[in-house]
Amino acid sequence: MTEFELIQRFFTERQSSAPYVALGIGDDCALLSATSTATQLAISTDMLVEGRHFFSGADASLLGHKSLAVNLSDLAAMGAEPKAFTLALALPKVDALWLRGFSEGLFELAAQYGCRLIGGDTTKGPLNICITILGEVPTGQALRRDAAKPGDDIWVSGNVGDARLALAGYLNQHILSDSDLEQSAKRLHAPTPRIALGMALRKLAHAAIDLSDGLTGDLGHILERSNVGATIWCDALPFGPVLAGQERSLQYDFALAGGDDYELCFTAPRESRVGVLNAAKVAATPVTRIGYIEALPGLRLVDINNNPLNFTFKSFDHFQS
Ligand code: ADP
Ligand code: MG
Image 1 (cartoon, helix red, strand yellow):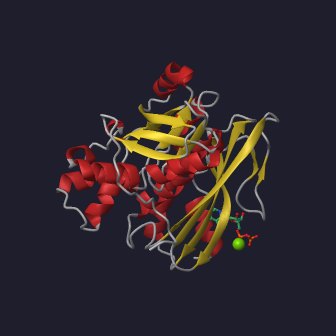
Image 2: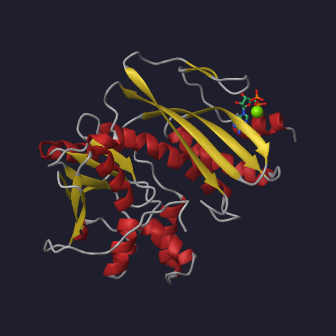
């Protein structure tokens, strides 16, 4: 199979038309028509490397889903609407079964969000999946990391910690029953990008980030960029359903410093509380208030009685360890 046949067979079949794609796959560049002059383009790239971001032999369809989901999650964190993406693939060999599974998982999620594959690159090499995603957001309404204000509430969507718990199960760092591992693994392999919530939070939220490396580390980026501090009520954290059945120290550890949740953490002024809850309802995505932003720098973790918890956490960093 030639490179072009491969692209034709696995990556162009299921394309539906979209008015903003003036020219899709097949030329040197894709051409996109701007849908409005009152919007900004939001662009993000995420790479998934075998052995680093996923286990060798990982299910191809789930990998297709996750590769796109983590990119969509970045758009969600900016309040942007998905439009199109490119796919750069390095493949050790042409494996039709793998490619079919991968493209099915990918296109199923793409269709759900009306996001079109408009180009990419395919080469031989160690399995590596790199997606660049493009979205749109009304000018000035993007949810940036540098916009948190003292007094803001801190919110998190969905629940946190189950993805890290599944990883611990796979690595035998923690023993899980088969059904617990199966349930938590869904969170690890098939995260749900919170696109509808991100869009509904425009004009309501101040700052937002998606949780890929762990809550304390990712929230830390908002604090640093916004020049503020925060207090988190650790007992208010929405633990994942499987993590909820584990002991407290593990709950804190995985909810605060586990990665791969792909939930949104955002700040919003107190006056927006009702608005935020309405946005959550519209987006059919639960949200939980977990603390507040302060002028005093640093991150303070407290229990239900406001007593400080002095755990030391480190969020995931690929160049450490
Ligand atoms: P060029 O050499 O000019 O970069 P290629 O031969 O690599 O072009 O690719 C031909 C066309 O197929 C281009 O439009 C490119 O965007 C597209 N393409 C290549 N790989 C992929 C892929 N994995 N998924 C989607 N489109 C792809
Ligand atoms: Mg090329």
